[in-house]
Length: 306
Image 1 (cartoon, helix red, strand yellow):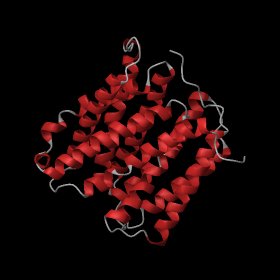
Image 2 (cartoon, rainbow, N blue to C red; image 1 turned 180 degrees about the horizontal axis):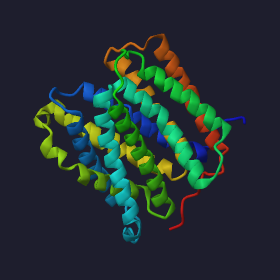
Image 3 (tube, rainbow, N blue to C red; image 1 turned 90 degrees about the vertical axis):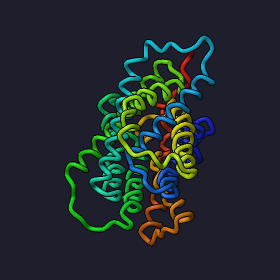
């Protein structure tokens, strides 16, 4: 394989990488936010605002003749459930395992699970370039996640919650691609699933302390998390998902910890150290391999006819 991906192949790859970069600002935004926040409360506010942003974008970008939602309702509801499971499982799992160990388990299991589901559902082999790129990216992300980790007892329930969260994430992406393949536009797909997920997590807005929303920093953080890391990011993500196989999308999304590491170094005074910089280099190399594997993939699909 030689030469860069063609432009028509590069555009969806760039969309997913841009979305992942926006996802990677989440941790820095919370670190710069006000005191008194809780992971579940922040997650519920983020999902609610993000769903409202996606609904607004879906309305502004509605196709001619409107959308035929009825045929997609079961898929969107299941996708919303998967979104809620991912949010709850991830935040609750990291609370028990610690960020470092939980992130490593999530990073390592996501692409593997996506690849297994791809093989089971589509019976199509994964390319060697994807396998090599995924291995390098997972290894690099693990080095970044472990760069300051301390030894401690392993919480079995916490690890299980993280794995459940990853399964919810992969299920959401598969269901979103199914809706896209059946003719629903990206904006409608993202809006429908995140709206359903937000409704399921709505009780957390009454159960979690939200006094931080009365501060300027709290409002700024909430708007950034909801409008940027969900509204804008998942609009890009949905468009890219329309053209790329799920395993490739999930591997490319591992640009998120690379972005988080760069921001942590630049804005929060964190130090990567030799292992961290090696991890960053492995992620960059793995993302390049994954992107190149997409260029030769026959699974890139044209836009569905309306």
